[in-house]
Amino acid sequence: MPALTLATGMNERTDSNRRKLPRREMSGGGMAVFSNGIGAGTLTRVELLDASWTGIGLKSPIPAEVGSGFSLVPDSPVWPRQTGIVANCAEDPKGGYRIGILSKQRRAVA
Image (tube, rainbow, N blue to C red; front, top):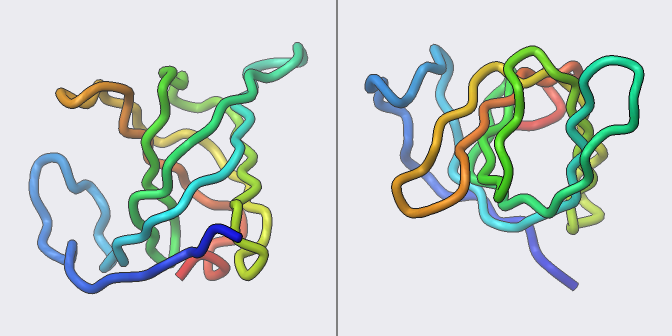
């Protein structure tokens, strides 16, 4: 069974780190749905990067439009399903896209 792990660090604020609250580095994955409007969403596998009290950072093979809805079902059963909206999306130089999610559950992710 895949494990969800937390690490220390990532608390400094940089241009690429927009969060005002400390975040915890994470590893693991899950299945995500990005939805825009009333049509069907796009299902994709994502990698969890970090989390804070208000959001989630992840890496996706596809871009997501800022403002679109988001639902995440992590591989680990110790972390509940998360929903929210896409706050930012930037191409990762190593491939894929780094996406910031504003979580509706807020305190559930840290």
